[in-house]
Structure formats: structure tokens, C-alpha cells
Length: 258
Image (spheres, rainbow, N blue to C red):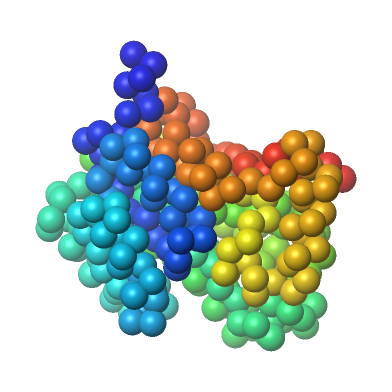
């Protein structure tokens, strides 16, 4: 019985946000596939495709497609393909975020309206759009997961604009969980500690965050993409059937410090 709760064979899911083999989304995809799930994977654009397509082939991904959530119609086309080829969906992993460099590296006080709106659209509202498209495909319930960070809750030096944006994402997770719960759809945020990913490298002085987390976290180590993947695979399965609306930390306990 216990083994069955962690068995994802027969489940199908979409993982969005793989950029390379250092991506959090890649750690999640590997863990989900290792647990038996069938996967649909996306790449951002033609520039990213050569980095992502071999990874998709490595996992034997059943569906692959380009996805830039800022391009009108691409998200809808992807879900139409999933419905056409699979007929349903069991889980979804949202691991994308973006803010214009000038806004990201400046003060929140000085952020532009356009930059804030773009960061919110890509990093937060796209998850809500995915939830809307996934809902009719999750007829037997399902699991929606989004990646966040401690900067949503606490002021983290140099995290800047992404703090308010991730706070909005975490609030969205709670509201989506409340609205979709009656349909058996669970919604959770996963909050890894700082990880040396390409996306994180855009944050100013990110090396300081990494060093501080490793030196001060109770476990004295950084989390890895495989640590995040393990939690993701658990949340996708039936063992997490009563867990929804929360932010779950994978950071060696760093979040408990002041």
C-alpha cells in the first residue's frame, strides 16, 4: 500500500521551465519519470530547444513543444495538443519566472509599471492560466505545483521585484487551492533554497545568497534540484492527496532562521 502511494505509473503530467540540466524543472522531471510518470516537456524558444530536446529524449518524453507564455495562443495550443493526444492530465509543474533586468536589479520602489506587469504575467498569472486550462483535463483530480522562494515572505537582499511577484504567486496558490479543491485538484507552492541555476544567476550578488544559505542553514548544505524533484514527485502522487494550498520548503531549514 505504501509503495503504491509513491508510484506514478499511469499518471501523465506537464513540466514547464526546463532550460538546461541545471534547472529545477529538470530535477523535477527526472524524479517524476523515475517514479513512472509519462511526461510532456516544453522549451522556451528555438534558442533553448537544442539544450532541452536531448533532455526530453533522455526521459522518453511523450510530448514536446515550444512554450513562451508571453506569446498569444501558445499555451492554449499546448493544452489542446495534450487533450488531443492524452485526453487528460494528472499533474502540472510550473517552474518559470522572469523580470526585466533593469527592474530586477533596481529598487522595488523604482520598478516600472511595464516591468512589474511583465514579471507578474510570466511568473504568476501564467500559472493561473495553466490552472484554468488544466482544470477540465483533470476529471479525476490532479496536482498543480509552482516554484516560489523565501523572498516572497521575507525581504531578501537583492531579490527585489521578484519578492512581491512571488508573494502574489503564493497567494494565488491558496486561492486556486480553495477554488479547485472540490474537483479534487490540489495546488501547492514549492520553495527551494537558493540554487545555482541559470535563472537565479540573474539576481545581483546571488553568490552571497548561496554562501549564506550553505553556512547558516540547519543542515549546513544547499538543497539540490534532486531534493526539489523528490518533493515534486511526492506531491504529484496519491500519498499527498490531502495536501493543498501550502508552501512547502526544500531548503535545509533555512526558512526558519531570522
